[in-house]
Length: 307
Image 1: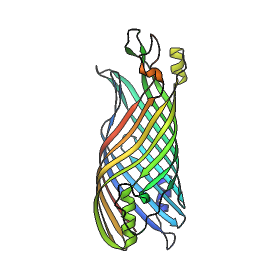
Image 2: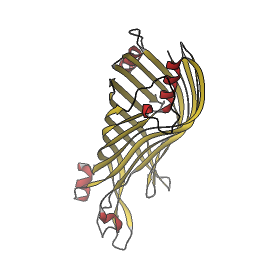
Image 3: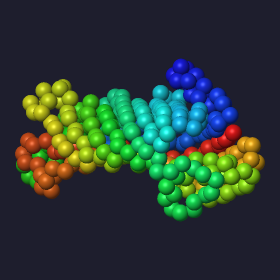
Image 4: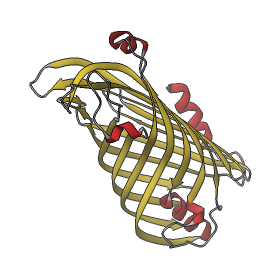
């Protein structure tokens, strides 16, 4: 982690006269929500510390990095390199907690991990004028993404009477998704445009997202397959994304600009099967297709500076 932070700090150094850099610090209060049948995945509410850095090293090359982490070993990391209008990004996250039944029985620890690789293109570079339309092209990046999500999941089986009952937990359900990547960041865009224009200020609301909409495949682990004497594999539609809704204030002196923002964030991993069989209850002993839904949410405060 120290090496990553060192590289990110190097990224914000003004290597030449063209270089435009920014740094952001913030805090985020995080709650986690996920459950199956009578079991809940419990993660203590925590405060994430956020650090983000970026720099236009030259007219054709820029780099940025973001780290979120708490004191419980939960984290999220995002790194991106831009060459002209094209960007390559890598995001990975981890969240840990305990599996607890409604009756109070503790089934031990769990860990969910998330990785995403994306290639995207900026629709337009920020200029010196601020576009107040809902989706300004200069704030949008579109592309493709490959996502891998690993999580525990409690599977149900049909009881032969039209109901599904909990059966066996897979500690390592693997979901692999390929889909469309969409990013919209009006705060960064408007702050840079304000800075490029010289002195001025702006106060506005914002909606921000970094998300993927994918077709995916879910596969059960070898241990699960041996326990139920079956091979679990399903196809479906997935959504993984980070969303924020809030207000921000930006001010530029012409030499430096700063931004203050407050928002409510939602980070969701939601997967649903495309199997037509889901429209009917599974037969006796049949495994129900998995549809995990994991959501993190909370309030966020950030302050950033551009020079």
